[in-house]
Length: 233
Image (tube, rainbow, N blue to C red; front, side):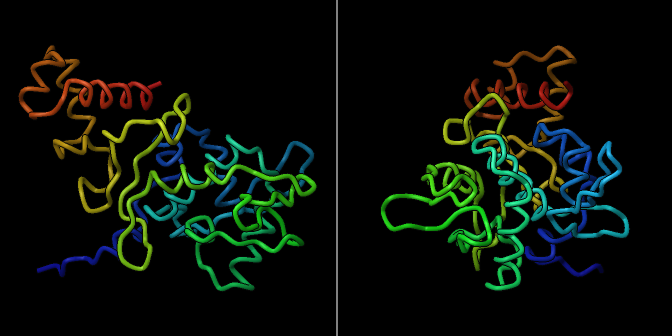
């Protein structure tokens, strides 16, 4: 009998291609590949990766990697932080502070000489990338609030965000949980894959029928279908 894998093993297990992560988080596959494997620019200049993949040899990513991309994407979309400063700040946190996954640190700290943000008492986060301006702390809090955390502050469930929806306001009907359905999107209250709901809808089942079958609000079915439509776009 195959021994049951622990939660920690599941969140670190290579399970997604870069294209799958991009699809789940509404990003360009080339962006996700560049973040993990680097890329060559049009001027033949090599841009170094900023995140470490779970399985670099097979170019596969883990649920932990998925959560890192989620946070980095919101940081980039909401605050436009330059990637060289992101890279410098993460390197500082990893090497000088011993934080293995800096973007998932719930007490983010960066030295001002090394980039990104610095905690500054009640005022917020001091943005070293923009000459000392204050950033909105809620950008990070909103991104991290989309993750459920387990023991030792490890991510255990992610509620992905549609690009057109703010992280704080987005519904939490759809989740990605490495312990359920091999880490594919599911309708939380029903525990069924969103792909199955989309299949039933295409086969002719109505939203109200599925809401009754799964004993969930109509809005939850609509959120699942909207998420699947986004994946298919």
